[in-house]
Image 1 (cartoon, one colour):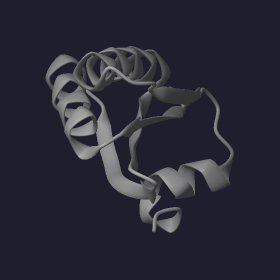
Image 2 (tube, helix red, strand yellow):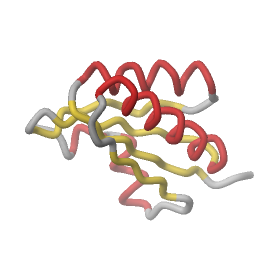
Image 3 (cartoon, one colour):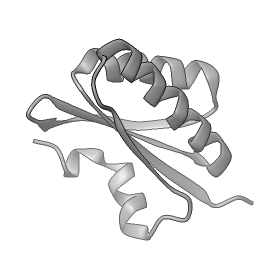
Length: 97
């Protein structure tokens, strides 16, 4: 059984993130753990699934958010996340405002 991977995408505004979530869920079999407002207009989304799928979803989501916003989009994928990262992805509101 493949270990769960975790990915995060951060962009300015809800519209780019929601479009990214839509594209990711239509293209891949990942679970969206949550969306949270970070402050300063930044919104983050957490993605959970097997490594290859999370990497693909993050790439799709990042491209989609960048195309919508025209601004910088940041992402990270944890291939073998520590338990604390898995817990954070499970309840992303822990970091939100």
